[in-house]
Image (cartoon, rainbow, N blue to C red):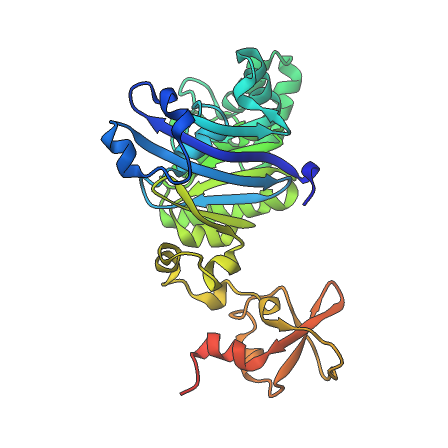
Length: 342
C-alpha cells in the first residue's frame, strides 16, 4: 500500500471526556488504562486508535453499545476534536484546518448519513436532496437536476414531490442517502444508517447499498453493531471494545483468525461457511497435476457446498479471473462445512 492509497490515517488517536481533557494529552500512552483515567474523573471514548483507510475501501467499524465506534467516526469528520494523536485526510491534518477550511473539506469531500434521518419536514424529497447544493450556492436548475438523478439512483423516481411524512422509514433513509450523495463526496461516513429500520427494509437497504457501492468509487466508513451486516458489506472490519480497536482485518481473517479472546467471542456464532471463500483455503499449485473442472475461488464454501461434497478429488483446482489460483484442500473445506471427522 502506497501513501497515495491512504485517504484517512489515524495515529494514536484519543478522545477523552471530562474537565480539561487536553491537559492529559502529553501523558496519554498505549499503557494508559481506563481505570487511571476514571480515577482522574475522565472517560476515554476512543483509546490510542491507529488505522489507515484506503481509497475506494469500505471499512466497517463495529462493536457493542459504548464501544466508541460512533465517537470515532465523528472524530474522523472532525465533528469532535480529538484529545491526542493525529487524523489526516488526504495528507492534511484536519486538526490544523481553520473553520473555513474544515467547512470546505466537508462540502467538497465528505458525505454523512446518521441514524436519525434529519430530513426537513416542510421540504419535499427533491428539495431535501437539493438542500446541501443550495447551501453551496449552486444554481437552482443544476441542483434540481442533480437531486432528481440521486433520487433515481436510490430507487425513488416518482417520489420527488413527497414530503417526509408521506414516505416510509426505508424511503426516508434513501432520501438521506441521496442527499449525502448529491454533493459527490469522495469520503462517505455512515453511522448505523439502517438501525431504525425493520429487518425486511434493512435487508433491502443493504442490497441497495451494495448496488451503490458497486457503481460509485467511494471511500466509506460504515458504523454498525450488527455482525451479519458487517460481513455483507465490508472490505475490512475494525472491531472496537472500550474505545480501542481489538482487530482490523478482512471478514475472513476476523472469523478464521481472531486476534483476541474478545474478537473470538464476538464471532463464535458466525456461520464460517458463509464468510470464508474457497480461495482462503487454497494451496499453491507448485508441480501438482491439475485435473477436472475448477471451482471459482471467489465463492463462499456455503455456495459451493454441493459441488465440494460431490467431488472426490482431494485437491480441487480453483480459478480467479480466468486463471488457476490454487488448489482447494477438500478435507479442510469439509471440516468447515460438516465439522471435523470423528
